[in-house]
Length: 370
Image (cartoon, rainbow, N blue to C red; front, side, top):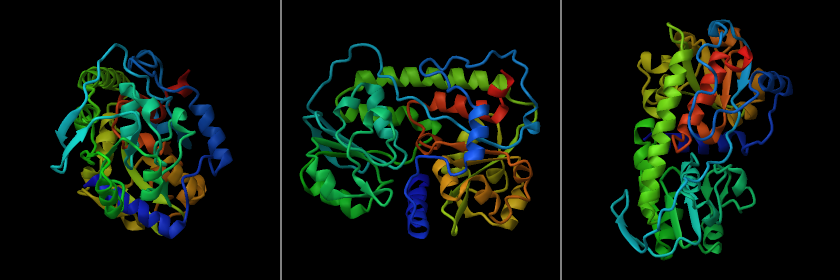
């Protein structure tokens, strides 16, 4: 349910704040500080340690200020030759029988942008003919956007691109748009919208099977899992004996869109994977809970995670600190906020290992120790 809940939050945010996804930091001073702290992205392919384990890291509880996690480079296609097998007939996540005969014009439609990253990793990025606002890969920047007002599908724009197959999940909508696309006769494969670290293999294989690229999918799964394992091993070397109390807050605009992401929303898996403690889950928050002064003071996190565009939309770090309760937390007092690119934060796709390393570098001040 987490992706559907976040989709509803996103739609609410758009109505209340009327803000599109920005591309530049709103707070230039905070951005300059973050750039100084984060000078290099995580290793792209192998998930190998990005910093020697013996480096003298600062006490993570002494760190202050905003840190921007750098966006990653586009996924590198899996190496090797993997013959495609078409046509393929499959039963999708919702029990629909779908036959795919042509993958020359693919559309990937989901809220996190994980499907397009997976297709690029499989070696089919050049077959994509359109994108949602979440597919921020550089090689897709020239493609037309088929969502409006954020993540609302524009069925007419999609049909005009004449896709030969659509791979989507219910994180985007409205449902009527997906129904219209299916009724048009275009093969549409719906996959599980619930992404987590534990389901990355399923995501990759679902996308790979939809395009008749099962062998490439297996190779990408193997590479992805190695990257995650390597990242976790490196992060363990950086993690303090007492994990940092961390909360993931979802914020949009300057109105009322402000939530705590609970244990079932993917945030806990992300926080725990970088060696921190999810204080929302520890306090019994499982879904999406309103963030207010009382709840934030109760959680009292030492570090706050947010999505980059959400922070920008709320007028940067000063806007976040002005939200009720934020400045009273331990994180607020030190302005200890980590902004994560939206397309990486909860997508749990083939670049998860790289994402974990990049977030951990920010959390533990790895780059500031260089």
